[in-house]
Picture: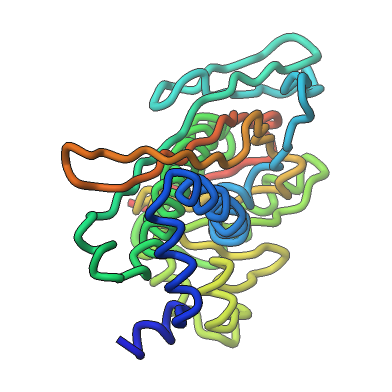
Length: 286
């Protein structure tokens, strides 16, 4: 038990505080509020989608409205899981916001057994669920936004010249290639190029931020949400699109007495939009 306490930062004093918090409705509300900031911080540092689009926390009453160039196409996610909507006219883009939520729970008998590190586990599960849902919508929007002229088809394995070509297609529009996002299967190809060819990040950076390295002018990110045969090359987030946040991370107690569980509902309201399709490129490996 002492080892578990050390790993999760739990000592006897914290156990007393958690015991008091879990035994009262007021304490569980306070515990829910304390979970907000760690989850938000994890999403900002570890969520790949939040690195690809500009995160815009909206002031109270503000509309998620953005200026766009009428010479480009824009794409917005109108509802979860839908095909992104293409916008080809209008000087402004109004981005609809969607709800993303999860419901981590813990067993009452685990609470009674004073296994308080399970609160940390519930927090980790919530962060992972929200992150995967966000990234899925981001990649769905980006995939729909790639112009036909920016789709590079290759056979075999990913090669440096494929990335070089993708970067040049973005640079033709006076942008800079800043992000390369791949599935682990495609990162396997990049590793074969050798560390002399690309600058690999430290293990700490990989674990804490999801940044795997640098190639040319771009950061390399790896995500299992990316299709195995796709590699996305993108301009800086501010030139690609926006992720307006209407309601930031909110945690509410949501116990389920019938199943003898304590739990929380963790939700947020945010939108997904690619404003400039010229800032995106895709390499498809077959």
